[in-house]
Image (cartoon, rainbow, N blue to C red; front, side, top):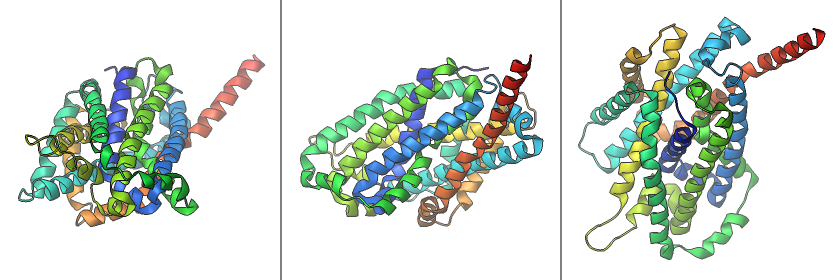
Length: 366
């Protein structure tokens, strides 16, 4: 079995959380919560940490086996099969959503004359190739881009800070309303849903006892990077312009000028950011393929990767008519669906608790 170190897990989860959120979350979050958007990210992170801790508790029940293999003994074969089927469909849906978001972004900004299906197909093929290289290779590749992301974020802030409208900073602690903060916090929880996937990766991990600390640190680093960019965007554009931008962080990088030889930095940012999306999509493709393979009793899930990738590609084409529908779904129904899916693995906790109490009682009786 392939092994993933805690350092590799930290870097991968950091990039996976950072990539999708920076690209597609800030605009909608700002529209709803305004200057309190930064607080929503922090509250959502805290709630996600609690959910992650419970998911790790489930995985620790049999640390050398996957949840797909031992879950049936906890809650019964039929309930376990239902929960796993729903989660696997959710993985496919998330993969399709990422593919569609990437397709819409590239077709709108850079490849207006390229067929949409070609962009989605190339993206899916890259992810299929990454997954077939192995889960360990996938996690190792994250280390090459971690430092680049940190440098790009810090560079952007340093280069545009002279354009910040600093008087707006007071609004970060004065313009708070309970209802928008609540809605923004609930929607922010799903931005950290990659941590829950450790439930399906646990047997691959080395030094399993450090997993909680690693995930807390990874999500914390990602949160800091997101906050730096979010606050920079708000200080630069304000809440109204940020909310109307489809990709506000991209606009921030377009504000940067380095002499006459380099017009702006957005090509460098896009190149690295695209890689984080490929890593995230590849993880969900692996989860779906491995989960299906384990449920049907295959020793190797690699033969399923191409088929599952093709399903995700097909779903991405039919998930919505246009980019407006995609954003509307993710902003409303997508939030409820994602949070419900994150709670599904917790159905195993009562069974673990009951078995633990029963085992303790039997031990005392002896």
